[in-house]
Image (cartoon, rainbow, N blue to C red; front, side):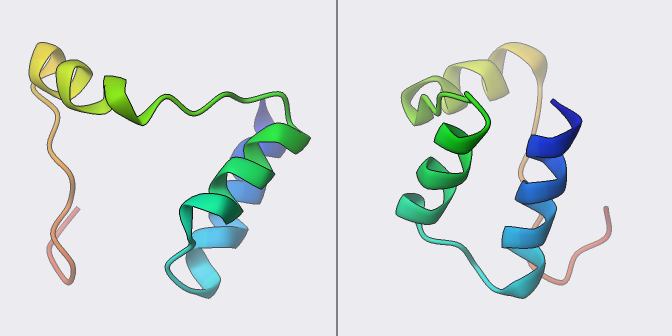
Length: 56
């Protein structure tokens, strides 16, 4: 799992990755993206995406 997060960090630090790049990286590390679950999980756990230039 650690290797996947390192790959994800590499992808997002260079530029805004495309979904195809994210999906490709996920496949290399046996990670399945299910974007349709993002909104329900964010709502369930009170998560919010950071705004660009905002504070973490």
